[in-house]
Image (cartoon, rainbow, N blue to C red; front, side, top):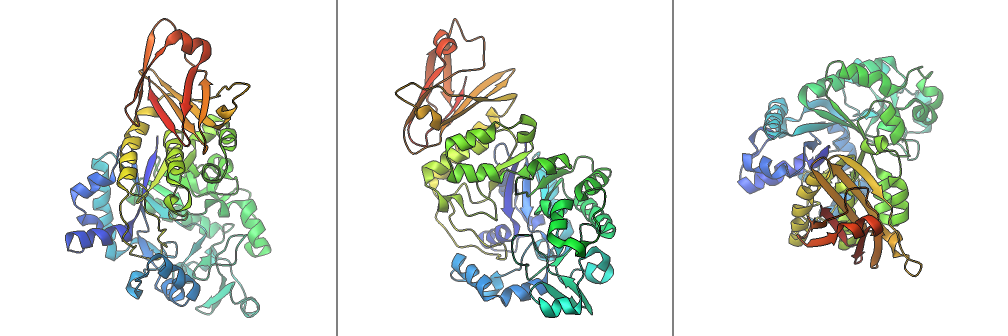
Length: 481
């Protein structure tokens, strides 16, 4: 199953350069660093932000007082040299020379492949930088405006090269000042997107599509109305993805997706879509809401990306207590579907670094947390094989704490595992009925892969009553049978 490790490429290479006392590009990363990056179970490394960033977008960012204040909040000793511009304000889908250019990326891909690991890169389908070549070479790919539009709403339009274009946006927020809106209904854009993604597929093994749902016909039509023209009969992604896969059959497509559109995007061709709903429920709701979410069909769940952090979300160490964060991590690590880990999450970083920055503040390493993840990642790689099944806990008339427990099994021909998570701030007990029909007549030894504890349990009792579990607040078991 797919396990992705997201790396902020500029920040990472900057820290390596300071560590080794020389400028380190993607082609010059030491072998021991690649070894450290490819952690147990990780089969995909997402090098976030490798493409050429826009000088025009950078100038806009530097002139935005609110934005630069947020940079200083994250990095108190900020200098202008630390502001690289947004990796989602792409001037060209060519690897930035400061990172090593296309040759450096190709070398990095070889290093990852030697470790059995795929390379994932970004694509931004909804918008481009104001100095992207398409503004002059392919203006039919963009949403246009008029001089009257510019005069009426200068924050929503911009003029360049004597033409007026709409600034990029989604339907729920004001326009983004540093990007220009692409037209999902345009045949020219669809063809250009296929070309771009084929080019990315020449350089990588997968692509993460930023805000993928914005390009769906119904969403795009509601956002742009008549400006977009007539909606094509075929939706955007069903047009694009098969044409890309004709050239790159194995290219992994991952969608950043919100608004409960994950299933629709899976049906339109994506391998995996962000599971923001699970993120919200693990961090802010209770076990019953998580359990309801996990009751969805298995095919749908296998197409989700489970995460607690990414570059758009706050660091989990900063938003929930450590015990709750660990329980949530056990859940996302052992559920079906893809898992996304964010570099720095394992060390307990608390500062979310804005993607515009090429440097982040120094923070102390949380060694107990790093040790916890050092046990969890190999445990999860061991567990997630075979058939997954949600387990319904059973309580007693005078003790309903079982409802706070989340539990599931993984059953393989040569392995059985049971995961139990107390998703609450109080102790919980339950009986867990098990899906295995050959338990009787012998003693079973259960080993917890998180702490090494060993439990011997009578098979007849397990078959008749289920496994009794008692966990402290936010406690977990990852039990190997």
